[in-house]
Image 1 (cartoon, rainbow, N blue to C red):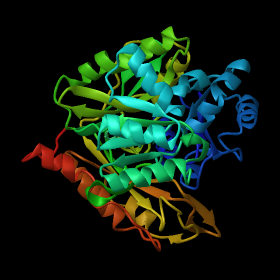
Image 2: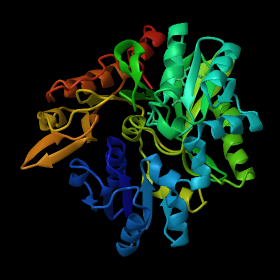
Image 3: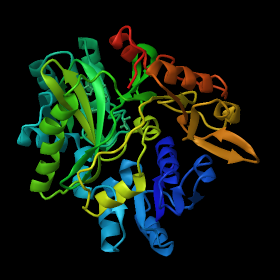
Image 4: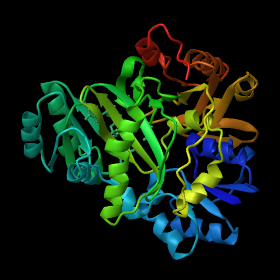
Length: 431
Ligand code: AMP
Ligand code: GLY
């Protein structure tokens, strides 16, 4: 099978890496990729959201399967573009990707289908937002309707936060058109879990659980980011919860989308809060999570290419995926100024030293190579992953790798997994 991966982040590097371990995959291409991906795939000089460009490349290169990493090509309709040309794509259609593209659609969809989620009001201006915050009560969560790279969410705890949020959304218009409609949502309390499945439109195959660290600072302080680290499995999910999530959230979502003429094929990512009233939906994404995927796919002991092909063909059987009984931790190294305004062009050293450590994998994201040197080229620069028999061991391995790598302005969270270990008490987190 000749496979093309779209995107240029650490998630896509992890996907390419998993494809390289899949029997039956003869060639892997990536568009546009990055210097890390270039070591495992042939790079094509096409950006992922150039839909005709990508489709032409897939056709010219006789690609059997294209896997889409980021949401933008999906939201722009790459599914429809490939379908029109008779090309096989793993990822939902534009209509199905609406579940990520519009938080208002996702919320109203949950309400229509009785899928558990926090109460929310849709508002369009400052006065409506202030009234909604009064009705919902503080703390409340303000969410821009459209895509905002994980940054369009503000948690409003105090009256000062409320003034700031009203100002950010409706005066500064910090989220542009994505903030034309805003959800004012009840603030849910509990452990946050990322739950992903692969679906072919009707069948569902669960992917291993994971926990994502979205806030910039240790102790979950600071602004939201695209994700600063992750570990898999999530470990804090009590036994039986996976079934509960499948029965009350995932299956009703896949069935509801089909019933609304938005058949869902691809990865469905559900961000959940494990509340005392059970799991509730925070958000849906229409693709693999980043950085969760970096942690998850290292545990996959199965054939990613086959499962993606079968899902794309609507021919997923009900088999389950095989996972290694080990933990993986992922720590994201970010550049100075991320998430607000990341600096670029700093030289990165030590990646090979990190890779030489047993159990360490380094996935590239915002990097570029120039004259034999590796430079930073974005906010999230590298994902450093460690494998271990327990979460504690995986974290030690991952941070061992982190300590080998350097660039000016490099920063990272030093507490990935710590909350999970605290919740587990005396256990080291053995999957
Ligand atoms: P979202 O993009 O909707 O997942 O929001 C980003 C982050 O904000 C989530 O990962 C949560 O940590 C937090 N968040 C979103 N919605 C809520 C909510 N209703 N209650 C509490 N936290 C939330
Ligand atoms: N890590 C969250 C996301 O991929 O949206």
